[in-house]
Length: 313
Image 1 (cartoon, rainbow, N blue to C red):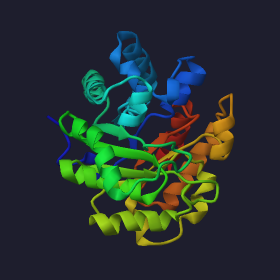
Image 2: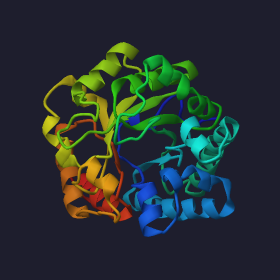
Image 3: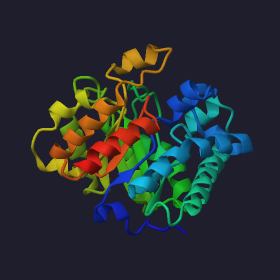
């Protein structure tokens, strides 16, 4: 049974940390092979779970020292039918991987009970295609059907909520929200943007958020921005009620474009202190910014700098 599904604690205020760039950390820092950048197969072996446990530990220790909440994301960004098929996972095996991912996080949460409170277990959903490019664009109905498998798996688990991250066009986001509504699951929607602050589809960030809210009756619990450096989107955060709907940022460490990152053979960790300062500045524009995390290229050092800057402010 979910601990917080009916009343997410972050909606009552407070700061919540997340982890950083799971896949980039495993690949570039730990030398783990992740075909198709998929981390979810690790959950199916004892050795893989040990790697994930070692990955999450520094972040949980940081949250314990800072006395803030934590949002534990399942390693399931790629755990959907199309990506699973490429990796030899049937739909049934994909469903099992999503369930096992939640069970793994429940064990982590229990291990840190009393040290990190509250801890929200979040089912992570990624785009059907590549997060950096709009591929195989779906209708809302198609997206609702495609992402339903993961959504149902999380609904039957102890997950408290679901976050769909690195989304790059509106129709897929709306379809995911529809799937969440079908399962009565709390959901957060996170868009990625290019260096001009627009979604890879060319859609304007403000219009994307306002459209999802309008057509779904404001169903998402909140919105986030991820997989982009703050300098790519801070200038488009103009005044408006829509800014209050953004509660989370999971930025990249690098200021490079998506195309440049896609072609990179080495990790670009950027400047953790500068990234932290930019998060601190973002809190001046995003009055409800609570969920502080990282994406590609970030690790626990970046989260330490981000928490230092934001909690001091």
